[in-house]
Length: 337
Image: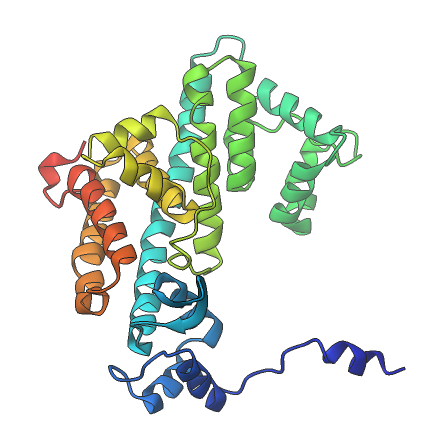
């Protein structure tokens, strides 16, 4: 039996660019604001079908017999292109914010360690690496990540001095070096281990917030679409009281807050906006980010705001973030805290 033929009958054939526009028209996607020819050109030279059409789920669909069908009520291809551009610009700003948060988390850990009498900058790292090396579920996860990051040549020349017994078990890495060679995800794991070891309750309460920021950072770093499926309710965890206070200060009502935070991506962006102001201490960095956010939010995003006049979902999300930005990211530099 031809296994390939047997398997292929279950696989969708690859769609050619010339077939994409007719296929989208079947879904009632219009080509009035942007011609079919220009749409084909955009799909060939600027973006791929999967990325562009990911945003269609932010638009209303027809309902037949009580069920949504894959035909859209008010959706032009130009709207999808506009959202793709906005998504790209948004990812650039969020990437800058998340790497700043990562950097200042490292500084926060170093400052905290200075105030702990029994800590010499080696003890906690050795404890963490010992636990990682002997972990039952995923042994040597951090070790493997470090080896991969430092590379074989650097390891042989410099890093092998931390492999005392030459058994690939790392020891006595100073914390100021250790923090620079682990991933953001491992940094948050270490932060949690450190906070629990020294009973730093205030820090422990930040862990879940940082974990959500790591997810967003990974998404923007890999150029994943972040402004799609914004109507999905996929996060039922109760937010921290600090986030509730943060949003309450923005005059965001409980029903709006609960609705928006039930979407993972909106929650991750909210947490990033919150933590950036909490942890970043450089006024210069804050000024640059505030400028970027205002140019994006009140500039590029509004370039074709008429596209979304009938889109209650996107208008409500814009209003939600508008309140946060006006409260905590005002373009008035004197209001920066």
